[in-house]
Length: 127
Image (cartoon, rainbow, N blue to C red; front, side, top):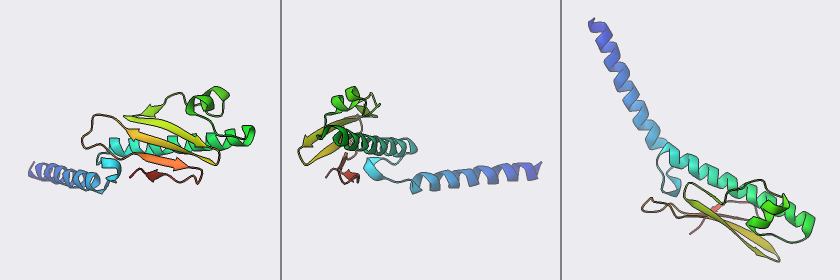
């Protein structure tokens, strides 16, 4: 019986150490330190890349860049939502390029940083 109790105690202590290490080792990018916020940031970055790819496809077909609504209505992009987990997406276009931004407007204080991507196809934090 003592051996079983000792084994259970060792397992609980091992689990607590593992859990503490896992939470501390997660990326703290964008103000998030939980697995949920890390997943949200990854989803936002993937959405920005998808929007940028749709912009490139739209430009190849029409010779100009488009707003977020035009990308959806033309079929260049199938994403129907304009944000994710407190982030709102916006597209700024010009003759020579585009910028897609994701800005946070949710309840977390201090807010996580926003992100942007342009025709270089690299996601950067908004300063």
